[in-house]
Image 1: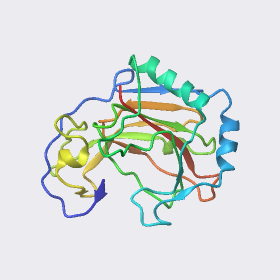
Image 2: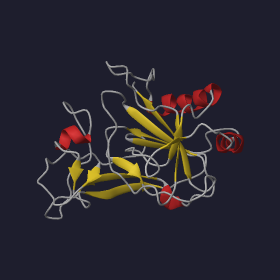
Image 3: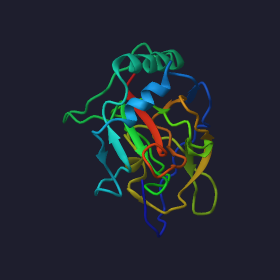
Image 4: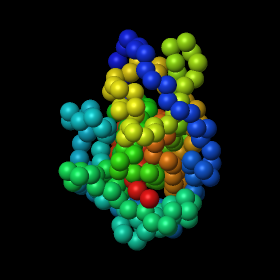
Length: 225
């Protein structure tokens, strides 16, 4: 979501307390050799530049695919086991567009700030992030957010039908900078997979580093179930 004052009156969303094992799952030591995966990723030369290097809405650098098929299969097996879903798949929209599944993202401390959002309900039920830099501090994990109302009270945190995403649910892309407040923070850990329901408001808690090897590196995944 973009931020733009002054504050306008927004719809109040439903609230669902983010609960481990129901709404999100934290799985450590996911890949058998994360150092090899990280070294391969750092050696890539096919990065696409985002903001502030190019006029894009997304920050830093990215490239697809992030993981090799055998590595992706490990991640998906964890997701299936955690959620109890019988099947996961990558959903395409009617126009052929799809979310950037298995995308490797590298974002530095000066390239972005937390941007609370939800992923499209039309394209995914679950999303996940796999952290791939052992030097990034705990404070650069992922947070779940809820609304902060104009009177200081707390609002909701989940997008429900008929809306597909947070922009549709609120009726605008532009909100005031203090429209959301952190609810639950999951710390960054190397080789940790954070899996969560994609309709919960969430964001990277923070970013880190300047040089490629120092920045917050993560692979992101989006599944329908």
